Length: 123
Image (cartoon, rainbow, N blue to C red; front, side):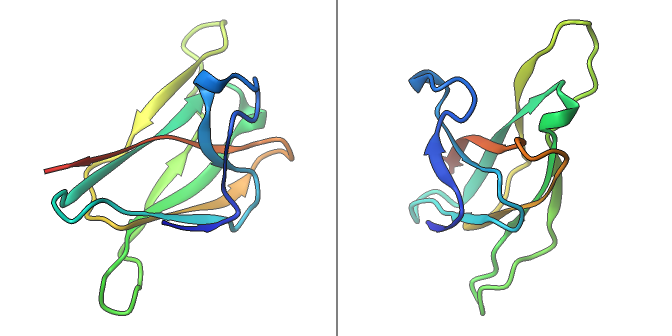
């Protein structure tokens, strides 16, 4: 794990059951890995219907040779509302080869956060 600007907290509610790995700083990044016996990883982030909390980020596997990221996948935390009620849900990435780097690229408003809720390593 390499961290540049992420924290483990519950930025909106303060509830311990809503703790995430998160950041609201543009340009912040975190590298997430898995034990060697798990060659695949998926990341889950919080997606929601509030436009003012929207961020864009990137997710990419890091090439072991020289530590350069492979082609990045875009993350957008906004999910257009299907109902008049606000909602939050988990959105899962595809399968990647660890380690992966997640970078917060842009936020729509000052209080917007990228929240990583799960890192799942698998065989």
